[in-house]
Image 1 (spheres, rainbow, N blue to C red):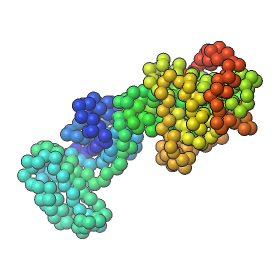
Image 2 (cartoon, helix red, strand yellow; image 1 turned 180 degrees about the horizontal axis):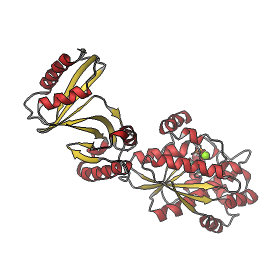
Image 3 (cartoon, rainbow, N blue to C red; image 1 turned 60 degrees about the vertical axis):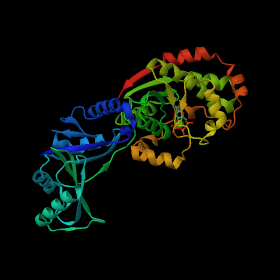
Image 4 (cartoon, rainbow, N blue to C red; image 1 turned 45 degrees about the horizontal axis):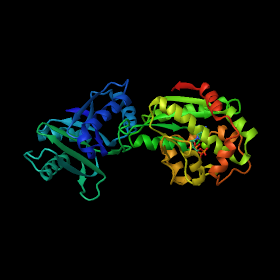
Length: 382
Ligand code: ATP
Ligand code: MG
């Protein structure tokens, strides 16, 4: 008998012929999450098992597994041989000492000499003799699970913890997340990583209009996102001179709209170099002036890569709930100025017409501004 953490995976089983590939990437991600912690990772039929792990760090291991996309659920339990006596010995270790309970058995190995019902009845009867327990098959306080995997292997455990679901990161291409210091963009990155996308990070600042506090905040967000297999490498670009140029030459109501188009162009340059196939933003329809369909049209007009906006249909409240669950909310609400707020006009255009946007942008030397911005590029590994 061996103490193990049982990991069940989510959508991977749906992927037919690609299953082997998905499982390999999933295993790599689990290994990466547990790097530096003693453990062995094994695959049994349809499950991953973590064995021979540092038991003093069990909680830490479980919290890391809880953030690996593709994990459907996980349990702390035992791997035993197939004999009923061995299974019972493990049940003795996980079973409650009092209260109501039931035993729920499952056989992946259908030639096992006992049926699931017989296993449950036999183990249940023995546990009733061992402890002052009561059986309640309808709404027990505790459930002891017995899962017979093969002729020689069974899993015994007492709880199911839900995993984050989704698909293993690195199975759905690569995207570049435009990470501001706000609430939304970290959530957008999380959502794409959850769908298996490998996510890289880009932040625009407006030094000296924005300060180091703003940058530190974004680094803090990036470090937290890394726990969800998002890239720990953050690229930053200074756009202060672009904001100054827009401010001095163009219609003030287009400040944000025009800056967005520069952000898209700069992001594409970084994305192409990093091999990213799309951009990701935290935009949500109607949330602010630049996030109208007209604003989106104006940004898309300068894009050659797809721009994914996973939060487009979400209310702010829904996004906040997500951010709280991920742990980014408290960092995001620290009051540091984002570059977008620096030159915020009193009345930003809500429905900017593309022809007007292009006309105003025509007053700028776009390419020179882009090149100057690219020269400010910095990279941080969190
Ligand atoms: P967030 O909470 O993500 O900052 P927001 O509601 O403040 O979003 P905007 O400031 O309009 O909305 O930004 C919309 C999106 O544009 C952001 O979600 C982000 O993807 C991108 N973006 C905005 N500012 C920056 C920035 N300084 N650096 C990188 N990306 C940015
Ligand atoms: Mg913002």
